[in-house]
Image: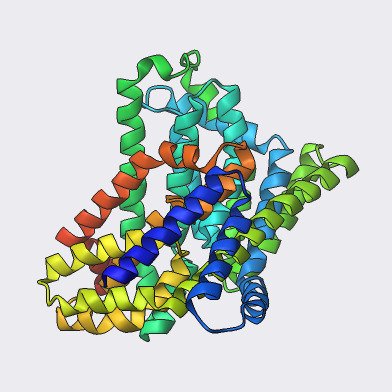
Length: 435
């Protein structure tokens, strides 16, 4: 066990050294993965790398990512982002935190569209970050709220990772989706509460409030929210109406974005090509990072570190609460090196017997697992939300991670609440599906 812990620590240090040296994130992950295969296992590294990279990018679900990113780029070049903030700003004037809440609410709503954390972060960030900066909001806080709230894409249905967990554990995906609603809302409320408290404490870092707007004027300005609401309704409606899968709904979003851009008079050949080029750059960056992370994930799987750690925890024969505390620490550490889906795939078969023996509900454990795995989206070196924001802002990934630290702590608090009050996750599916 000590040897495995030492190996995992050395791998983490190696990744951080490469990142600190300025190497691209994807190449750093790939280099560590290949070095691990060369030194620790007897398999052909070239063949493993080729099949792993192809398998990581040859995914139908992944096709939604560039589509949603393209949708965000189209919307960024229209007046919809400005209209959204103009319509909301008068109503948020007296709310502590004001337009920071738009990041949280926008991510929560879009999470119900995409099911992807990276797509949620990329789309909402492309719309909100420039507008918040233009209005004088603190950039560190704006980036932190976006990175934290982007993780809601993993929890609020339709969630790709809940589908993976349901398939791995042979549990009802519909029940898992319903169970994710209340914890998702709870996490969004925690984020908004932090925004409000931060704004009250850091008054000097908040911009000057907009001038007071008469009530009827506020109602009139609210009409500017209708196009973005129509877009969200169209995408969500296509999913829940049974007309499109979440991946196909991304294409619906692009088409509706183009239609709205045309109606607003901002759709030109130049804006169309600019949006397409930028979406291609961002998508290629994310896919390259996914490929690098996949190589590292496979290397970790070959070493047996995740399975050995899970088996070691099981051998301790802990009480249910002690078991969950140990698993939380275990998943947080794994999240520094693996993406969320890989964590579920690599560990579920080993951990599930422990959970059943402890008398814990399998549906509840799925929600707990996704909450913990959400943390991996904002922990370096393999935090996909951090990668997306690095591409948008140009900041060092470790700097972005520091900005998201308060939201990481809030996620830990959310895990504590779900463990202490399991009905947060179980009440809704028990109520809806018992009728």
